Image (cartoon, rainbow, N blue to C red; front, side, top):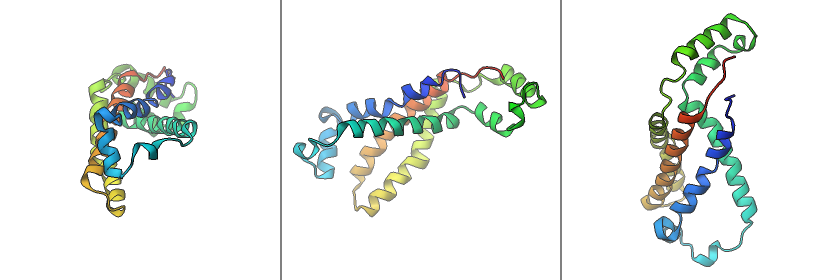
Length: 169
């Protein structure tokens, strides 16, 4: 677990922040409502505490999972389990030496953003498109949601790649 694990909670806010901007009527909100056949009255009401609360919870889950995608050093840690957890073990010593030499490699915003882009194209787009096709939705629907997730995951990936830090074991 990183020293600054709170970054997961901060990046979990990004889907809400990006959504507030992206789905605003002045950006893509009107197009989104039209594609879904919504009127403004359809969107009034609802349990907003539950909607925002669950969205934040899912954002935490997404950030936790995505941290492992953008920070390659976590893969090294995982391959040395469980020996790495034993104080003074060879695995722990090797890991600390490796992190001292290579712990900051590929730890930039741009690197994480590229992972967000790749993940969006190779995972998010197919998931959205498959659901949309079975729901008989058009390409506008797919495009709107894909662009939202592309922006969101590029930001989450970039921030986590740049900011997550681990202490020596």
